[in-house]
Length: 309
Image (cartoon, rainbow, N blue to C red; front, side, top):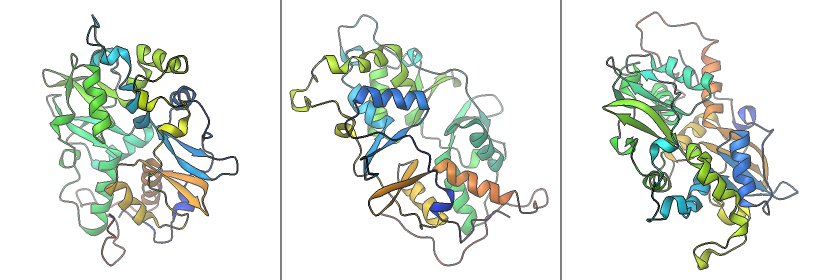
């Protein structure tokens, strides 16, 4: 039986040792911190802890769209997917157990993985957000299946080829909530391009590092390159007493993979999809396993599931 404890709330699961930045930190320095610390977002805070907003990989990509290596039509060798893709990937199979899949994401510390069929052909993506959906369905209904293939995101709009221009990939990342795009050759996965892969691409990383030496190409955006100028200042925040089930609901109904925990205007912690998934999976390990073949489910808490937005 899979459980979401009623008494568990944000302050019991949140991380409190966070990498944060001040509002005057330079854009390029903040990008370097994202890459160096292997995090997808940095809370921006005043010296007294007042929370101001979130600087994320997606914030970076909005300015990366101006990189000459991407937007210069006269470039002899424009950047394409194969110039940025990673090739060493965790992959899952559609017949794998869905809860084993969640454990794989957690243990490898990745937010998503391609799902393959028996012929090693690409089927879809299984992600942290998909995992949240699995847990919520388990709370209120017995799962129709516990195979990953039942839950894989099969949106073909996220599939690219090795020759797909990187400018098109960046535009996709900016306009959608996708965090990674599988790269296919003949239906098989040969790589994956993530938001971070784009930011780390050598030509783009070099351009980001030189931003302070050049005015912004758009005069209307020729502002100081401080991190606050490019931050998401409207990102969802939560209080420390919000319960775990409500947090799962927020992660399912919004594009965010992390929620700053704010009390009296000050940042006191942060909770990510991974933190919640880990907490729930840890809880289940304390419960006797169901007989083989029995549908796995979370114990319902009663009442209707909370609705958001």
